[in-house]
Image (tube, rainbow over all chains, first blue to last red; front, side):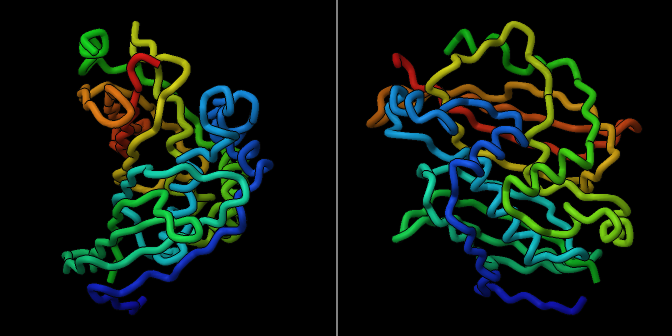
Length: 137
Length: 145
């Protein structure tokens, strides 16, 4: 693989389909996180959230997809960290983006450090963080 | 807060987690990721991974065990931060031993009142006792709710 990265380069953007309530039910089942704030409107309203909200980990998984789509089968994700900033709700379209901040020559290849973020329209950063991946040579 | 501090550094007893291919596929479906590494066994077998691969955040679904005596309030917890460090990929068929400990407790006052931050560090080792991954979760608990 001879993809070469430069500082400042944008990673390929991932725009996910709108989050649906069904997806939140599926994610609850797949993750074992059955907190009803993600699936039961009445419960979420009583908790002061105004309605169900997506699992933060679902949005992090979207960012994970953006990273693994970028890296491909040959690259290795080494670190992946985020901060959850704002809530995501059913109907929201999450866009995942990343930018290379450092390219490090390692004995086993090239180690790429990126800043990453997930946004919802119009311009709300819902999750932000960083990731590192290794492209073997 | 002092209640929580009593549990600092006390690891949970490790829990055996078996990584099942059905669970990986269900997870990939839920997040809407069609990557053949997560969904297509024949494809994955012919890669360097040799088996279906778990998506990067899949390990959050493992059972890391309970820290003896520690109970968190059922409501009002906020997931503030999450990070993963991977030492090798997790694949279907892995048998991992997972445990958790509380590594930091601190308090901050802001516009939402006093918040208590609990930092948990989780780890997974394989049956040869090799570290597979570490994760850190920051959980925020709003006082007086």
